[in-house]
Length: 223
Image (cartoon, rainbow, N blue to C red; front, top):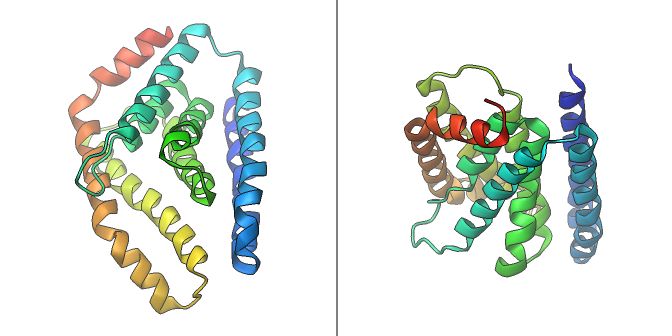
């Protein structure tokens, strides 16, 4: 495993540990969850910056990462009247595949952190950072690997379910009604929106492949 991947895993595992602690706080003392999140977010941002700085990313790659993150934030602010129709998954995956796992995690984690200053911060912010950060990390592990269009479609579809599962898990813990029936109810309520999000991501990946990837790599100085 390369140093690049090791940093990505350190980043994600550190975040997983923080979210695990957040789960315990939500279970035993929900009113402390917001305070914990407020304290944890700067630490997460610092970890992400450390992973990025340690690699000495070229200025052009940072510019591409910033542009993709800013675009993802801007599109989150656009209110689309159809639940699940969004572009964040696509842009985070694109950042990961084009730039690498650390950058993918950074794009995914920063998008909700920044955009939620307008949409509203809360305990859900950490879970959104986790979900999109891990999505970017996973996509980054596929960097420089040739993917077929059907693989991209399946991956995009699964990204919607994976993101939705983590956010539904947060909601289930927040409700503090710990039984299997309630869990299935929460998952069922979000299934349509998660599926639509996955389909939207899959279609965007198939349509934009491979010209969007080449564009980002060229802008970052990779080609």
